[in-house]
Image (cartoon, rainbow, N blue to C red; front, side, top):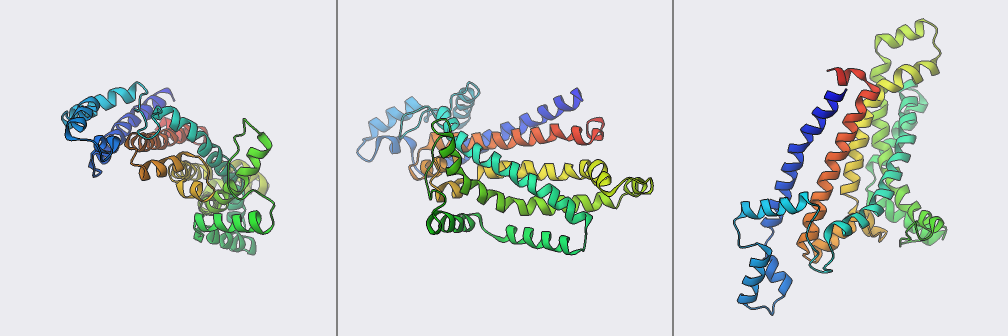
Length: 314
């Protein structure tokens, strides 16, 4: 098991390095001179050249990358051009908002989807199976921004049950903070529960066809015992992979939802930074999101042996 953990952590390091190279290269390919943008249109050539020298932009590209990577490894992602704040604390502050929404939504979606998929597989081709498949397909077909706007209009404006837009930190007011998160979290739950249900159902159907399930039934194990002890643990691994992908996808792509509900999360910070051409923040957000992707997939891989010991043994 220890060798498996070490091997998986070691295999993640090249991915992180490639992500850093990709982020650095993409930012350098963006048109425009960062020094010119920082000084504005009124700066002369001498001022621009002096700032380029201070920022190291006159160095060769490989030297710039090594210099930047050295600071990144020390936890320094630079300073924001627009607010002059350190980038890393700014990202961590906004990430708390995004993480509270995404983690809550994925946990709720998984809690609904896994039992629903299991029931659909158990009653395959029956009325319950058709109903679950139809609802999950409908959920898959709805764009997140459209569903978010629909919930906002219905529960926020028409019924007046929930606040329309805004955000209250839970540390400031726990109840109000939770109330403001109901609609964004509900939107993500309704969107992601469809794909997780379909995956859970497909995995459970494959497991139900295996011989050891037939043997368990032949020994007199009840149907609930078969589902709980034999089907669920073996069918959960593929669903766990999808949960990890969904989690990473949402943490990196929640900008649309945060824009709809005006939430001060990481996605909103990235959008505002792109519009303001705040390159250090854009670069930091992209690198941080890539690292989150890698870390989530690493955690998912490390969880596999808990459900299937053959993974660690192999």
